[in-house]
Every structure is written in C-alpha cells, then in structure tokens.
Image (tube, rainbow, N blue to C red; front, side, top):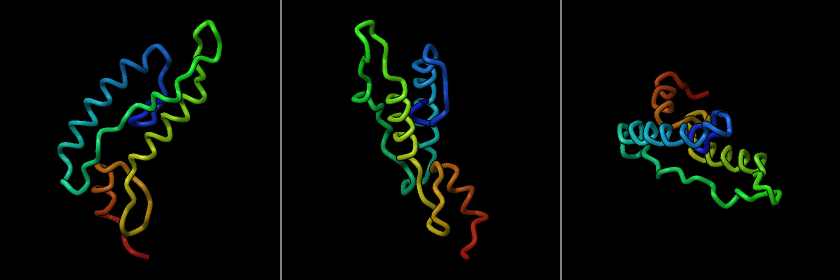
Length: 99
C-alpha cells in the first residue's frame, strides 16, 4: 500500500511508484489554497522489520502503517464531516449542503 495515496502495488514496483506519487503530491499540494496545504507525508519506516533471518518483511504491518499514513492526510469537510484529500475537498464543498 502506498503511504501517500493508499493504492495497492506489487512489492517490486512500490518504491518506484512512491517516488512518482510523492512528486505528484507536491504538485497538487502547491496548487491548493494556503489553508489546505499539508506537510509532506512521511514514510512510516519504523514498522519495517524483518520477520525471518532470510530478510523477509512483515508486509501486513508495513501495509497497515502505510494505510494509516495515507488516512492521516485526509481533511474533514466543515459542513458534513466526511474526509477527503485536500484537492478533492474543494470540489466536494461546491455541492455539499448542511443538513
């Protein structure tokens, strides 16, 4: 799971994808209004620990940490409380109405 966008990728391609995703994140974040800009997401390194001497990683823990990191980037709508990526929140708020 990508720690930036929460999409799933293969273990061999995730590191390549994360670099491209982070670049895209910076481009999108820079275009947001200042009050919606977020700090750069940090890769959850502390959860990567080999589970065997052969060097295999605990992918479940790694994916869970990446999922939590991606979810922490979501911003709640002031009207309905649903959470969105900052660039999607702007679009959502055009049609969101108070109950």
